[in-house]
Length: 159
Image (cartoon, rainbow, N blue to C red; front, side):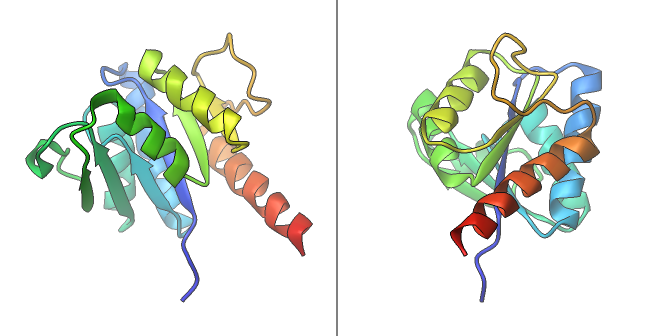
């Protein structure tokens, strides 16, 4: 069995309505492409992306900051309990093959920074425009296409 592509969706714990719309669509598109979504497992962008992925019959890994799986949003199919607080952001960055950032605060910024340090693609969709990851999308469709293309290009280069 081939390992599935894991895409991180990171963003604001308290998202705007438009951010949540973007995240729902991104989550659904990840599932449609056969990817697994990894996120922080709580509310806001995380819950919206989880919902989109779950509703499209996708798999959702929720890397939780606390000590109980009960804190996960209702769309997380595999809760990962860390009891590590914000340090769980490092686990998300290492677990994801690539990330899509939607809106976000300092936790999102830390995940962007760690991912870039690891050399992983980070697509920005209305997130931290002060930081240049080299990949900016205007729509959920473009964000998901960019992230899968970035990963596909890396795989093709290895052959």
